[in-house]
Length: 362
Image 1: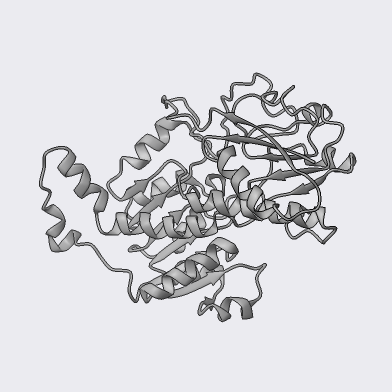
Image 2: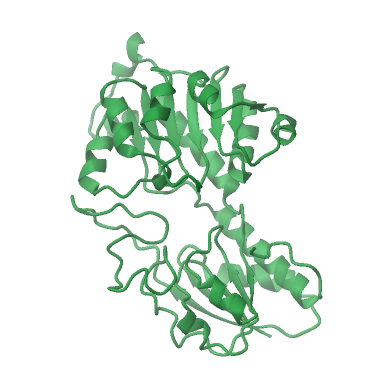
């Protein structure tokens, strides 16, 4: 059986193959490995005033003139990057490259596609299913990473860590944050609201309990008893917004067709509240966020993702002193890579042994 790893500088094929060899060492059939290391992520992406800020694996000015027309999106490079590279593999392990129908059709013996992402939108999944190909992904592999990053960026914001560093970098020993009216504040005993209580929200709640926060969660798709079992208080959306000192978004999709957090939601929040988004930029009305920050109707914002406005808008937003922002870094960690590779390898082993798959994509 031949396994092909379409990796990159994040999901390095050598790392993935070592994990696979260890987990699959006792299977009954010989395993052959092949791979390609694609040159992504790039060192940096230049941003101009008209740029749409990158989100996920792709952005609107993708290198493809026909981006979005091949049934795949949020990928790096071109939609034909893997054309002619996969050979006659039985199993394909893929991260951020595009896998349109035309490339799938080049691999006649392909039995399984393993996507090292939670949301495999870079794969023509329906086409693969029609050909009887099994699809596996790695849901929740980055949950701990996002949860820890969320705490880290919040602490950086409320304790003025980045401002202190930037001051030293600019040859300034900054002391202004010792003034009482701008003093840092602590997490202990703060009311922390989590919107979306999936794998990330649950991982975050465990950390927050250790900080001594009063943790609240809203998620209409999670049973209250599960929320309570993690020491978290179930609460309605409006009550969460009105009550919490920190409101952190951890929901990816909405069936309403509008952002989860907009002007009406911001209007419910306390003037002292901090808003956090390490989920998806399209779930927030950023123009409404800019309005409430500039008019001081909420105290601040911490952002790891952005929406579809041009960079000139976000440059203005992140220049506000009450905003801390990063370029979609929350889910990236070594453990995310190791965890994702392990999840996929274990399901491949189950497939070879004729067992039920754990991470079968619905």
